[in-house]
Length: 353
Ligand code: NAD
Image 1: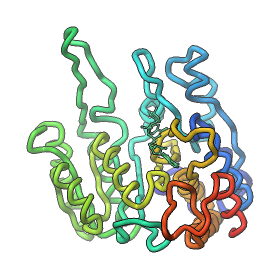
Image 2 (image 1 turned 135 degrees about the horizontal axis):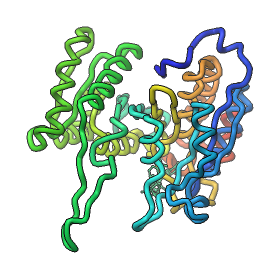
Image 3 (image 1 turned 30 degrees about the horizontal axis):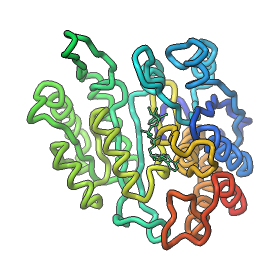
Image 4 (image 1 turned 180 degrees about the horizontal axis):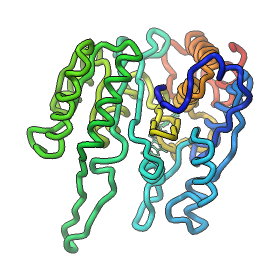
């Protein structure tokens, strides 16, 4: 990852343990987070987890934001956060904790790599290899809603020039530093001329500073349609918050399962790593969830804190596990040799470290 405050240096590799704030989350969160931490420990990751409670427990104990003051202290002190998914309770009075954390900590860039692992994981799109760079603080996700009358409600779409500049520059820098060739901007600026129009205007302005990176723009509807049929056309996609949220679930599912994709939420000071999926209440407590999204997020975290060598070890063991057809239920298909539980999958990865 590119956060400026951490060094990917050999020197950091030699350092002692890095304190990392960890939240198990709820739903499938505790299952996949424990599996991930077991793998990291077995791989020799030099991290010292500091646990915080967030989500359901906190909502129920009267914290309408889903997080307590001492948890913020831990996040601000450690600056690195590995987060299990959390449920957003339905109904008025509860804010989305994910949105609160991203906005409060200034995590402006949500980086979501989606990759197919054909022929080892069944997919109709074997060449899919996309990084979605989703703006993470603004747009309809800014959470500014009003009641106009009993029958009319309004949600403000907030897009600012500084916000656009930060995310577009991040996408180009990411493309350059990761050997990517093209950045595609997806907007709906034919209709939302001022908000999405600004996003694309800034994209064009910043693109000239990166002559080595090809650029293109799609209106989001046809862009999403092309993504669904010809994902190999895309490389890095930069897009406002809500479009990025939707596109990344689609792209992840196209690789075989929404359970495969990780996400890094990057700010100037703090970074948070999580799976792209939610708390999956429909399968919670059954021990069948795929821990891969969170594990790959942890791999991104290890690179971020300067432990690239451990990250590579974990990633290779994980790939070897998939290649040998050891799959969780969501990946079950012709390629599967053995369908295992969450814990069984973690054991298989550990055996291949
Ligand atoms: P979801 O992503 O939790 O689940 C969607 C579908 O994908 C479900 O059928 C689920 O079983 C499956 N799935 C998800 N992750 C999986 C995994 N690792 N392995 C196997 N199958 C998996 O979406 P949802 O059901 O719409 O949301 C549930 C809750 O999660 C909501 O309260 C939502 O607000 C919250 N949410 C949280 C986050 C986050 O913490 N970052 C992200 C998205 C949604």
